[in-house]
Length: 119
Image (tube, rainbow, N blue to C red; front, side):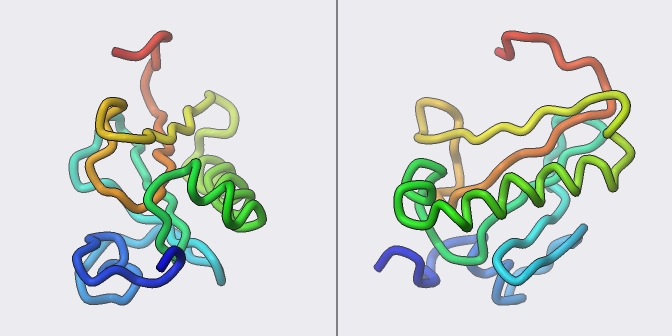
């Protein structure tokens, strides 16, 4: 069922503290932690604690929590010192877009030049 923890989901296991992560911040509805394969000097993932397969499913089912994820991503960026230099927030939706963990998540990237368009 959407929103419920999934036994085979890496991010659900991180939320449940069954898998370790370097937590940057946590709110009632979100968890932010460092990406284990960073693509920039700052690369933090912000996830909803509730399980939704991707950003579109999250936004359709829980627009308030989707907003929480986006707000937390901005707060993480500022907390990481990216407020002045700029940062990117990316939601990959579907395997064709590069999503590899099917639990909605935002990538907060910064600390280097981020050319557009990305690969």
